[in-house]
Image (cartoon, rainbow over all chains, first blue to last red):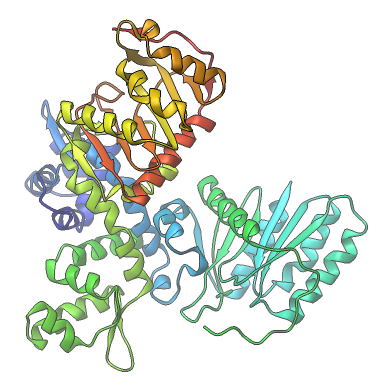
Length: 265
Length: 267
């Protein structure tokens, strides 16, 4: 029996035990098999399995070790921490912005992704997402990536449905430029380009029906466009779609962005 | 692997009672090391060692004015604590039960069930369910594996007012003998005709949930049976708990594929 979660954290604070737990979530294993999976002796493996058993994550039946249902339930909740580790120290200096606590519990959904650092690499991923779209392209922009604007325009000429969310903190001049370009093209094609305004857009996103790219804000609330999380994974894209739809519902239609005082932080 | 390194070092800090307390105390506001030392009843030198470990793992940082504050990593980590608290305090329950049938978006939110009581006693469990039904005035929604005949009696009065009832049954749902001919079932059937009671049917019910405007309870599947064993029921009046249960109910009511109405097995 464990008394409290601190005991569980102690057991999970060892990379070998984490590895063993994950191996056991797929199949039951003997002590020998466990020892070789962590390149250790049976004695060392035994110490680890003892800890895992005492914290109720693992049990032994008929000489083999297997994961308990408690262990199976704990594993997905470790994905949040794995995601935090994915980008090194990124989340020491960046926040979840306007996604807050709902995202915080679902960070595990974003785990299958690539973390990209630097404008050139980010630009190539944004291009990829735009090019990958077959049905829709949904974006949240503070600073519209003008570099991909032409690609976006080509896509809506092909008939892709485009929706863009801007924030009242968005950069007025560049956004209006993009909007004007898109409005012009829109008049020539079937499918409307729609736009809405929300109070504050700190998480930015480019999302197609195939892939997505996410950018997070720094501690001052400014979106960091030099680093992106990008993925074609379904769970990742579904999370982005849910978040986009949430923000879309909050937003209001508008015609042009107006110059504003920078909002107080 | 970078992933495992962060996971294991975050957990290492969380497993230290002192560092865990320091982290939770910082969730209100940044504090000077001297204040932290005072709260932990330690010397400054003693506390500095712990603070350094927390800074190295990027869970906290030191401001220019010397105060210690949570980083976003620290904040996000603390936001996961209700999940781990809920699961570990019920580790015995979850060793014999699984989250079969709970959609993943709700598994992620399982920490919302933290403010609840686990009732292991079968009789008390029945009593709890009865009380929830008795006190329901606006709505009573249920995904259920069983329905006692006395439910018709309990709900009779409320159905004459404005109680809206929705119940979801599975082929594994069982009722008592005489269910279909129980006298009070008449008002149930009439309420059904005027739309105040709605019933839906699915292939299999792996869990139960009962929710009114006041309370909610949920039972998970026994790991060997694949359905609830009535030996353990979480109940609460907490808003987050009720919302979680409501979302689970709506998932079954709206999203799980339905079958045509069938006669429930009587035992």
